[in-house]
Amino acid sequence: MADAKVKAGSGSARFPCRKLSVGFVLLPNFTLIAFSSIIDLLRLAADEGDRSRPERCSWSILAPDLQPISASCGLLVAPWETFERPERFDYIVVVGGLLDRGRSYHPETLQFLRQAAARGVTIAGVCTGTFAMAEAQLLQGRKCCVSWYHFPDFIELYSDVAPVADQLFIADGKFITCAGGLAALDLAAWMVERHLGPGRAQKSLHIMVTDKARFAADAQPQPPSIATVGETRVRRAMLLIEQHLSTPPKAHEIARKVGLSKRQLERVFRNTTGKSIQEFSRDLRIFYGLWLIANSEKSITSVAAESGFSDSSHFNRIFRDAFGCSPSTARRGGVAFMNVLIQGWEEKQAGCLPAWFGPIGLSAPNWRIARIPLITSSEGSQDREMTRGIDADPTGFLQCERRPYF
View 1 (cartoon, one colour):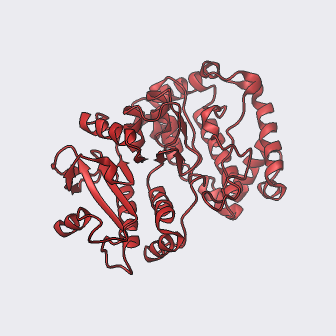
View 2 (cartoon, rainbow, N blue to C red; view 1 turned 90 degrees about the horizontal axis):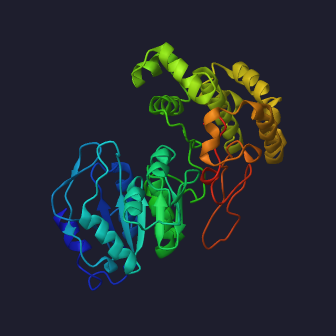
View 3 (spheres, helix red, strand yellow; view 1 turned 60 degrees about the horizontal axis):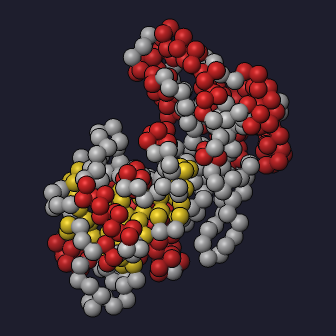
């Protein structure tokens, strides 16, 4: 590590062909996969083969002091240097992680981000690093990308920012935000391609035993949702259901985890949402199945299993009850036909809106089921079509719309 530190800070005289420099700011309890995905792709792009010399890229780990920073898995990473001169870097990448262990940021960290922004440095927030950018007031009035998992937390904390949870990352001027996880690898490939060319990015991905990077506007692997209800225990129950779509938990298991009896949870859930736990889970999973049909070429049997249905016959029956046709028919019908199916479902549900739906700012005539983000093509210099799919909306369907059962 000492040698790497010397190389990273040795300047352009030793490596005159450097074209990309990145400073990492690791927040306490950061996710290791997001950090390692980016730094390892930079390492591979920087040199020929797998020799790890920072010839074309350089990187450093920055912090308010040199105390080790703990990743969410417990691994300690020692910073290489303290904050100074952010303009040395093309990017400052802020890597976040767990929110439930405190969301306090060192004042010097926030000040460093503001200083970097004032000096024109591109800042990238990865995983919950986006929260730190919002805390530093860098994202006001901007569109930003967050993980579907953290979307409810973000909108609750930062009402002046427009979050999107239906794509992998977003570049809005000098500010980049990324959902985290393996989407960080896609972001790193995008950075390398911009500065070093597509050959360098592809070579690095191949060494990492992956064939290609996804595009920024590609959909996150699971369609995001949002529990807008105020009842904390119901929100936790909703999240538990969403986190286990393939293996839906029983009502008594959910009740135990939220600290209620099964009967108590069923009562408060129905009073809050207008649906039973089973109905909520079924609706969520059937729309996840529709999302998979639209997003992938998986067989109907595979879609049924991934959506938590016992078999394809069960899935077909519930799908037909919801949309009036079979999954195969929906797939053959394509995007326009699926939009008609969604509209029909909405019309059937229109008289059953829960009482709590109104306060979130959507009038009943404008109420829509969540737009389903489908696979998108490319972005950047090739300037191909950015999106395709069901009601494809470049602003992100979660900015202004909600599923009716949330």
